[in-house]
Image (tube, rainbow over all chains, first blue to last red; front, side):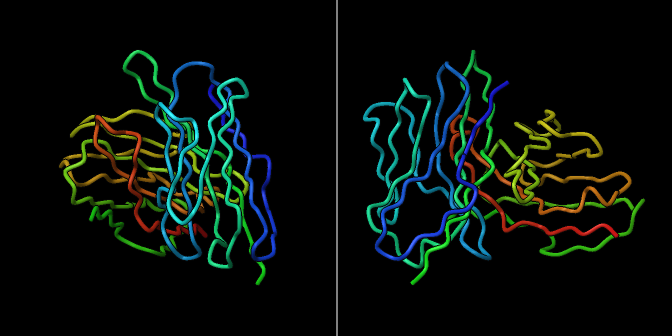
Length: 115
Length: 113
């Protein structure tokens, strides 16, 4: 069965520190990859997505993610975090197989940025 | 702007009650989804629908049913609520050719006593 792993459950960083959140998935076929963010009290919104092409994807608010097919990974990065990045981050994978699409979310990573 | 609305932000029900959670989207999306969000478990898909009157089970459909009588509305039904169904319920929608980008509602926090 398809699975998505986010190994960091809770990350605490000081402002200006660099961020990398891990995401690994289990399926070896064609996938589309996403990062969603949920700010406190707000609903989930798309941060960035990868379908094909350049494996380095840039999203909103200075976030980027790199798809490494050989490692089944799609890690989220930001060079310098701000207090306003405090949120919960979810990786999601959509498996594409013969017209069938199944979406699976990771368990989420809570990021706390200390001013 | 896509808008996905859910009927209640907070709901408190008693064990055994029948519970209806409503979701409405205004972007003519074909796909609609119901998830539950629990700490440490992330989002888990309960049911989804790719067209009116069509539904597919997700990963955790037990104890739930759904109804999609109109394209814009997708209802989640708890036939007999139990305490282990206390959770945050999220509705989402997307175009069928772009299941990739889902738009989420604000969520309904359901407490079953």
